[in-house]
Image 1 (tube, rainbow, N blue to C red):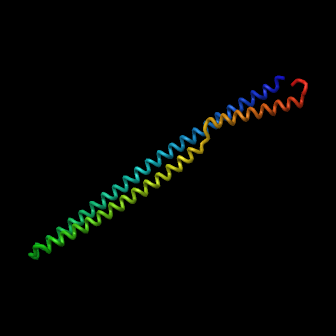
Image 2 (image 1 turned 180 degrees about the horizontal axis):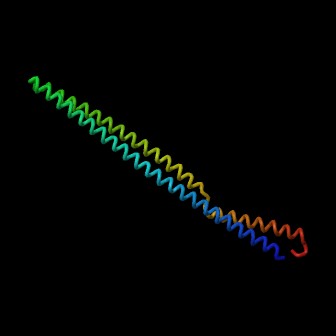
Image 3 (image 1 turned 45 degrees about the vertical axis):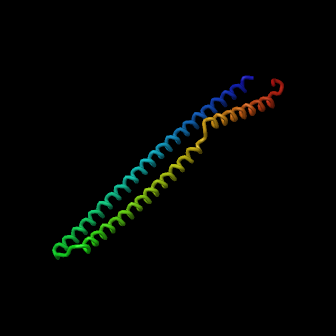
Length: 167
């Protein structure tokens, strides 16, 4: 009569250990996904910094080039004795070309920044999907309960067939 209880106790302990192991594995997965998510955010921030730094360097270079062009133009005009509207028009054209170039650089920077942000969002969504696939603690306990009930049914059936009068 005691044997079914021993079997049931073993089943309960085994199910409890299975739940503990499952919860520990789930927690480890959650920590790994949290670390991956943090790394993704840090990487995106670094990419954005690099994009902005590159943009700043390109704009500075282009502005310096425009200033050199205007200085060379004014120097040549001064040496030749030419002055007036023609020199001013050439200087304005140089400024306009620099403005157009800088505008294109800004467009490229914004596009690169958006692409990096979208890539980061895609990685974040993938991480969130993996996180959602981790079973909840309630599911583990539910499975443990079913295992215990199944074990009890098996034990009681074996006991009834082995000794039908005691049951």
